[in-house]
Every structure is written in C-alpha cells, then in structure tokens.
Image (cartoon, rainbow, N blue to C red; front, side, top):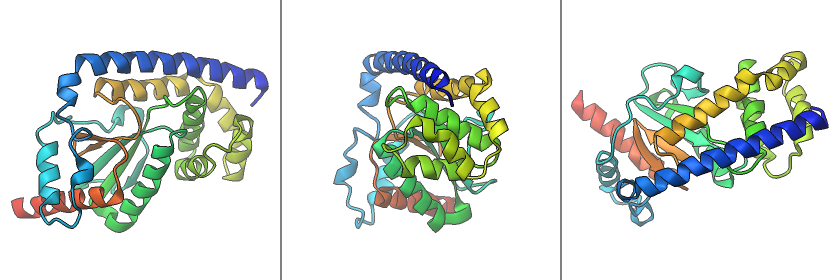
Length: 245
C-alpha cells in the first residue's frame, strides 16, 4: 500500500468515523429511556454464574427488549463461524479491530465455538469507530474474506493489535497466503468500503453504540461480557429449547 493510498484511507476513515459517532450520539439522546432497560445497564456483573437461576434471570431480562428478526447482515455476506445451518443459538457481534474489548471478545467467541460446536453460530459484523485506522483494518479483513482467509486475518489483526503499522498490512496478507493482485484490487475498490459502511450503518440502525455489541437470538446485549455470562445464557437457551420440543 503506497503512502498516498494509506493517507487516503486514513482521511476517508476519519470522515466515516465522525459521521457514525454523530449518529450514535443522536441515538443515545433520543433513546436514553429505552436504553435504560437494556442488558448493558442491567447489573450483569451482579449475576453469580454459580446461581442456578442466573441464566433464567438474564434470558428473561433480554426478552424484555425489542427482538430484531435478522441482525446477521446476510445481505453483506457477514463472516460466519460454527454452525452453518439451523443453529440453536446465534450470536451476532459488532466488532472493531482496534478495540481492546473486541480483542478480548474474539478470544471468548473462539472458546464458545470450541465448546459448543454446531449448537451455535457466530456472526462477525464491522463497526470501525475506535480511530481513523479502524476502517483500513476492516477493509483488509473484508478482502481476506473475499479470498477465504477471514479467520486467519481476523486472528492476526487481533494478535498484533496496537503493534501493526498499516503499511505492514500487505505483508500480513502475503504471509497468510492471499493472492496479492486480488488483494490490492479489493482494497482499492469502492465496493469494499461501501460494504463496511453498510455494515456499520446497520448496527447504528439497531442501536449499536460501541464495540463489542452482541445480538443473541435477536436480543441485544452490550459491553465487556465475560465468558461465564455467555455460557450460562447459552445453556439456558438450550435448556428452554429442549423443554419446548
């Protein structure tokens, strides 16, 4: 990536970030009363994972919210992990490659996928608002996805978070095995950036304010959620599903 291209992406990213932040601020003001009822304001940290009723309490709290019928971003071909069809639990995450909490969430999602296999589906969506570099990283990951290398690029971007100069992105793409001609064409294509913007705008429309933000079977939960909370919630959803069948 040339210095000219890099500066163009940084400037473009800054404009998009400022626009998204402005929209998010308006949403916070308009929907403050609604957000007061969401799970991020519910005292998740007060839940005792050892309490056998904790999962039921959290699921009941989730169900008091609006349910979004399809937060997965199918129209933009969002990356998937886990079950490819008929998952019992779908977790959609809005993430930013420059967000330290998103990095921690990445490790949690990997662990959930390992432990629940085909029971759950994990959907990654872009919300690049941390800084002006976030859009550039999202574009690199999107181009990796186009070649079937999203898991590898996602892993490396989070592994090198805070220590990866943007001019090193082509080297990283080459190291994970990407076709560099296709990669360079992809990062320069307007279509790639448009898909990232559409992704983030979809999050704003559903009330996403920052990263990481999740939609679990259509219900929104935000913030730095520990593995144990996801675990008890998934177990409760699976238990409820078994009882209803």
